[in-house]
Image (cartoon, rainbow, N blue to C red; front, side, top):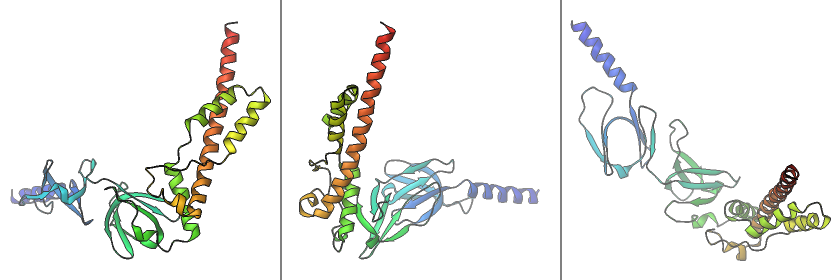
Length: 250
């Protein structure tokens, strides 16, 4: 009987360790747990190392991520965004920023230790609390860095005017005439001049830095051409569809 009890305890202990939850705290520490209760203020858990363990209660605010043993995950932080000089956007939780490095946490199907990146590799650090970029990220930037920053911001903040879309659709619908084709092309390829956007944290650089403006305007122009082209051909498709329907009821 004793051997059976021994193997039962060992087996149950191994099962509880296997079916463990995982917590990540605000410092990026990843540790296993057996969660017994979660509410709006506290998380209660026990260590999965032994069968019988004292319950531990911690403030929910100290935990940034939970993965339950059934595979369900719960993100308890509002995402920050990093933009590298290569134009890569990283959605993450910034854990620490010092003079030269930044430490952040991300979860991509599996847990990894917090990542460390040199601040010199970043264009922007956009924090969830409304803080824009870290100010010293803009110091020492080259003309190319500013141009890349402008292109990154235009990708996010530049919006093609609705009148451009409507005009291109109308031009497309009248494409059997030469004039609409020329007009539609002209509208699409005129570089946008109204670039300001109040939600762009670097809006002032459009006035103060010509390299930033150049990068922003070039990216905005590409977005405008793409949107105008889609709208123009949408107008053509609409016109052809209208003709087909008209012939069916002729």
